[in-house]
Length: 413
Image (cartoon, rainbow, N blue to C red):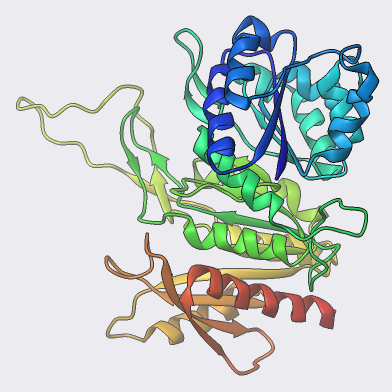
């Protein structure tokens, strides 16, 4: 595979050298195209030694080969890492002021951009608008990782590890292509649909170091996002705590608490054709978050933690949809444990009636079931009273069954 590796001018440029090695060691033909600013961090000799090719940055180099046109045309994949705020802005604006931006304009292959910058730069409305523009054009923009940044600061803005970028790039390159060579979502049962889904476990702060949480890994929700994307949908994932990376090429909204998840879902719900509430949302949160760590003290009694209910997000989304006269299909998830009062399916049916969603995916959970595992076993209940559908297998297989059932529900509307 012919890969163009674009390198932006940020401190994380040194990680791109490891990414280049991953591609070459896997047998791919890599041309490194750093920006002039990138060469201030990692010199030309490094890129030439690792790629085995001359390194150019300007459209006025190798003019006899029409290099600024040839690179984008001949590439099977373009990866930009790090993609700085400036580089994202120039790409979104269609600039062609150096060799890399020319290659991006000429590309008819998959393009993956891995941002890296300071947290405030990443969160700035201008950067977020540029990312949204690029994603709308089919560019796959990863979310930055969270952690230590330059200096003492920490937060979202770190370049994802080279292995993560490499895996995302290979997955993107493996997707089917259209007749003109450009990759696009598969024509599938959700082609042209917009799917908004939640995944992962919420965390409710008790004090600066402790929280109320649950065992959810987010694996099933991420599998659902991937299945919806492969079925042709435009996917937005509202992600609480995840132990796995979301698929490349979808919009990811990071949240922590149930309230943050609720706000993100309600804000984006009106523009979606389908909503999938697969997140493990805490039923309760501490009534008061302590400003400092709660200490164990021998001279005072232990203080109980007062809990208050979190909002019922699924029920609220159904009510808002109905009030607006919308025709969205809403899918809920129910993690249940049976007891002396009823079994898992009985609790599931009661929840489906109470929530008012079209589909409810019910699974029995426990310390050795579902959470964190790669397998799942669910029953899909439908509001229309049709026969329950039982699905068991990998979480990807379960996700595929849920997405197919969702597609049939959308088609019927």
